Length: 637
Image (cartoon, rainbow, N blue to C red; front, side, top):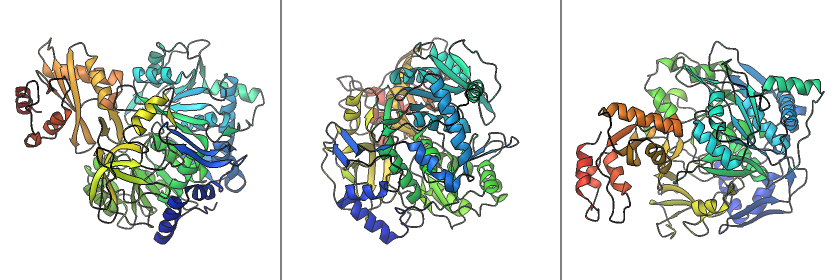
């Protein structure tokens, strides 16, 4: 398969970028013409950012699965589409060719239809990293159902909140999941969530861990039984439903600066074009490459760079069920060695964690197949960048440091592997079609180089968020109201003397923990649910492994006198309400919080205390009780 839009030289990047800014519609129409459409578009782009209202490829008809699977059957039918590496290295891996994938997706699409799922219905998927997760995602897309994948680490309450928001009547899950030396009881968690969601009428359960589970008559069915029914009925093919380019493809929930998660909506046409375009160009994908993205499909990285981008490009995508440190810290390198991985895309958190084990686990493996390394989730610090470059890439593999978000759908700012220069700790340059702008707090553009500001985007790109599900006003307020006619990313940014961009961190009340965005309000709400908590405030602080840790300041009625036990209780509460990923790393009990006379908590002051920079707190005279600051500093953990 060839990619007419693949950029192969720095000069070609400059030309493509210039054209994409001068003639965005002509540029994207040319890229989109490489895809399979049932009907071409009437207009390439209609937009305004005030509503916001953005339409790409208006009037075009397609189905993304025809681009991911069907169009490859003639030339790539026997090529592996998915390589699955199980959690336990002793268990047999699975190779699923494009022809196998076609059959399995058609089969499960028929299962969904047989269970009453129709175009436009929302389907919640809560599974471990097994091939059936990718199959379920694609089967939903094939029949026009809107999938909402929920990461397997979220709690019953988090699932219930998302199910209610999407009003998803169908759930797909597993009896359990393996993750390192843990077994996660997914079906039990779903059962707890469904106590609050009586509108769910069907739960399809895949057998993975053989854990005993409760199966409710009329509601719960086994995946394998449903497949057998389809085979008995003689249903083999399931025609891909015709979708409009602007029909929703999926909802993915992300934390915001308020407590309730936002359902980010991505649509069929523009998302397909941009996810594939960015995959082919950033990683400089070559036909035959094995692409290993270590993310979970529960996050946007897994949607765009395990499933849709690679499969649309006809690539071999590798799915891994386990964790990088089990059964030992050589697991990633085992996988690279065994499957001759060419592209490895992972998170700085994983790299920093593996650095702690030394070079022993690396040196036992042949990593010569690696051609491109990638980093995602947060800016990669220079020490981790150099370790990855020297010890994994052996000084020969370009590292792409990719900046993007759930809301952007695909990589926005990144060097292109071996084509445009890398700079450690910098995302570097925008992809063609992406027009970043730095603004001050009043929204005035900051021009020139060697400057810092808030990062915004001033022109639409095909895979951008269209709305937040069921609440368009929230989408407008969160992303388009802060600065008129701009998409506000929520990130601060520095632009160096050569125009390279370096992300400096969130400027809103959102934390980036191990590459996962967690809203401070969400964590505070969960902490405040604990019976002994009067009030809390949460901030981020530098963490050696996670990048950012969660520091909670808590006013607590200590009933049993044991502070450590109280901390454990609070952590359990957070894990129960959100999930283990949101548990605070540090909990400091305080008698009061620094507040203005109007009652606003001054998180800026708490952030400086958590970062152990009390000298940079500044003026505290406007506080209701300045003495509380001294007490918090003296008792800092």
